[in-house]
Image 1 (tube, rainbow, N blue to C red):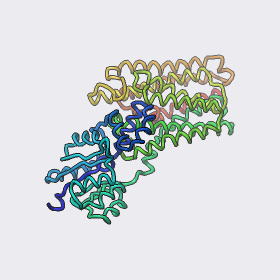
Image 2: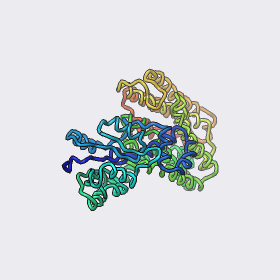
Image 3: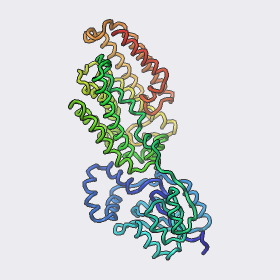
Image 4: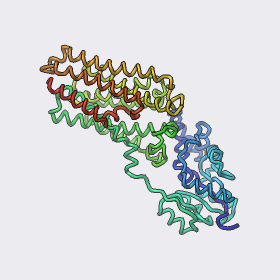
Length: 473
């Protein structure tokens, strides 16, 4: 048999796919029931093969949505057309390996981890030598552990960095290389969603409304609160992305997120989630105990949202509105000021309107794609008109609250001429109406707050409202 016709043995994790099946299945297990983690250690005591078997019995991998290495798959298709035998050999559990092989229709056979044997490294090498003989196969891999297999292979196909290709070349002939680059800082920043930190600027609202902006100590405490919340939020974003891998991969835009696309290892998220949370807690220790309590409530609420609440109709948008409002409560707790009923009422209604816009926009995109139901949500396309009514009404109620506040006795002690704030109501009416029209036309981003911060008209409205507030002072 000629060299290029020798059996081609293909690794799975990091080679055929840009992710790791064990980590994928681990996160699915965690999503199904967080208490499953209590059993993981005991399963591992009986070996990695047992751990993988136990997880495989409890969760399913959707082979059709995994992030595949497309250039490498095209190479395999070419080899297949030339009559070459192609075998999938992986340390992942055989159940998942067979599902992936069935989906791709590329492989003549599958070798994988069974309930008793973890087919990794030395074990994989032994299995291949036993089946094909010394240097009678070509092996495609992506990691240093594959060097053990390449040391007894006829040729190597390297899916990895240049340094790995050089190590493989010292052991055997390199038939082909598919160079990959290590994750960049840009990808980590994207996963952290730093652009979403602008939402945490709501922590500064009590500082502004209490007219304490000129106090450097108050400003410093508010900024520290902003940092604590931002780190906590990024921890939640990591966790959310890890839990929503399957849903994100079927979404038109979320499929490009680093974890969903396979461009950033799930291990970064698994380690980064608790690290970011710990940094957030450390930052909060320099603030009053009330702030720490609010931060804990925020994190608990986001966990509940991630695991369950976001899949419940209307509960999800009320929860989102509450999460925005909690940021304002945290801002008041950070500087020790009283939070008024008016500010809380206004924030609940305006953020409920924006949260509904978020769901409305998702359903608009689904209707354009002729879909009927939002993935991972309880909404249907038929809910569009009702959501529009509820969201618009909520936005208008927030303007009513603002008007009542301007005419209340509470305002007279804080503003010398409250009448000058009345134009702010008209501007708010215009802004709420405009943002809903934009959403109705299908021109709204997934997150209306991020949209508003980039939208010139929204920025002008914000400046005008702030201007009238200053004049009233």
